[in-house]
Length: 292
Image (cartoon, rainbow, N blue to C red; front, side, top):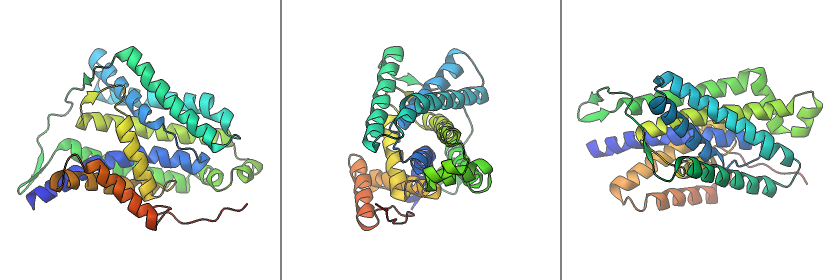
């Protein structure tokens, strides 16, 4: 039982990181129906910003985190304005190919600038783990879980109650009608990208505290798994992204503990396939009819 609960805690730790990153995917898809495959590379940009400001420039941890968030937001808004905005009226396949191209551009640029060798990230918190009987939970794990839950609650409250959040929901429901009703669609979409990239910056910081190795391709795998988490929970639905991330992290951790470390990804993808076979819209998604 001790092994089980330890693996459950490890699964929740990585699952909440996936969930935080998945929120960016699900928000962008919910508004503009775009799968932003460059989102994982925004995490890489945030990680490099964190290590440069913290180690090379000697900034404090809060300032380093703020810098990572700001840089991620600037990159996200720039990508949306330059690469995605001109293609809004184009077929979705054009936007999808552009997103893949932007991802490759960011990875190769980072490879040229920083090199292929990974950079270590220093230990920030030297705090003793919390102990419950035979269990021990690291401070980073507790911090990740608390921050992720708080951000999801804040985001859900913002979308449901604020004026900007209502505009997001209106654009998500019907782009053209929202435009006719006087909603500034361009600013709404930009705000959505900014929020998603800010969450990616925070997720990048939490990720490198748990896995302190930074490389140009480090965002690919967590980005892909966060996308799977968003689809699993119901892409376009904020609580669905959170649920999908948690389930994905726990399933991955349990597979590594009880089956095989080499089969963890296969089991995760298998769970996604099974869920989509019986519930194509995801666990919290609802089937909708498209008028033609």
